[in-house]
Image (cartoon, rainbow, N blue to C red):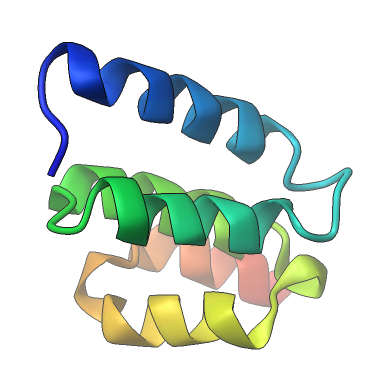
Length: 87
């Protein structure tokens, strides 16, 4: 896993991708690829942030996104999930 200065560029890219989740169909998959490549053993807080962003856009979820959520279901915030189901 990248650390210190090495993590700065991937984190900036990840922030940029998350902000595009509603606008670009491939942004979620690109963000997930970045997390698995640049942050192989990503912290749970990073994964939880991505899961929160993904679940706020259920219509944009790809198979990869669903798999990521299922693999990390323990990080899913029940309040956000419940809100997403009500939409």
